[in-house]
Image (cartoon, rainbow, N blue to C red; front, side, top):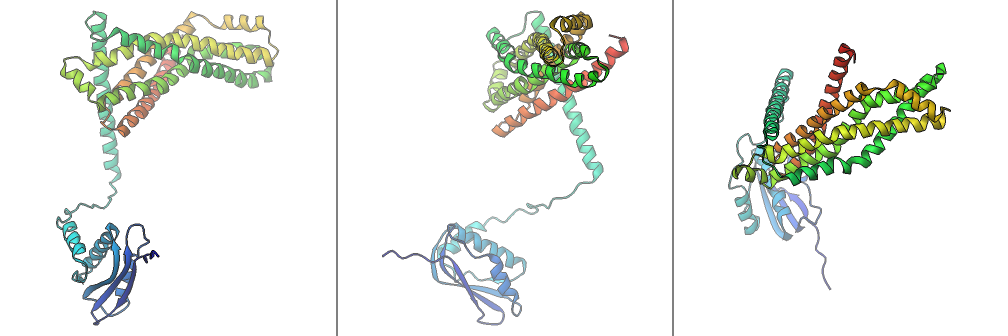
Length: 380
């Protein structure tokens, strides 16, 4: 019949007034629920002041690293209280492991307490971090501009197959999500506008609202945000993974510019495809508004089309298309920049993808606000 081992137990006695004898019995293994160090401390505080702690391990069964960890915590706690700990009563193997574990003393100030920095110091560090990021973005933008210039004179070194593959991924592969989001945005604009226009009996102007909003603003912005989350993050993850695998370093070693080989094709692909996706988004958004206007507010097909044509012109579409091209450059540069700055670990690649999306969206909204102010000043 197999005997079931008892879990670790402790008992205490005081051979002398200044000595606490700790009797250890049973199995002291990680699998067992071991006693806590606080039990020994409680016994030490319950009587006269202690000078020494001894051990009796005659009843000790199996033990492993759980027992060693318990003893290290115990010795550390009582050494701070300047109470001597006698190891003679412990098994020889335990004493050797304890000597090995404590052979290298802990480095001084290794466990520094968390110090709350002054508010001005925090502001200074944050300002320096922002300045570094702006400098890195400006430098990267300058290098990208130089690579684009080399492309215009036919001296850029990159694979044309990479360009066509990236164009497909940024263009045709993005059509489903652009279609869905643009159609829903057009419907939402129509619903929101209809609620207010119905108060004045002017539901016919739903077509004007949806058409102008999609052509000037929403088509470009929604397409850019979709591409930031879909393509910008992918660029950052791809180049970040290349950093992990040291492929970027290999390109540099072979004399190939990573800016031309990796960044330029992605930037060109978004410059080409973003205006086309923006126009497609405009048309799908207008279609969404058309469905709501004709299906729910008794506007005829002819009335909706005529009102849309009357409210739109090439300038409206031109503003949106121009902005979308700029947004495409921003998405490509933000994604590639964060990928180039990525660390060499899986978590760093994920952080780079997240940072690329955040950077892209922030810059897109800021630039769109600047465009709105400029177009209002010049009266477009």
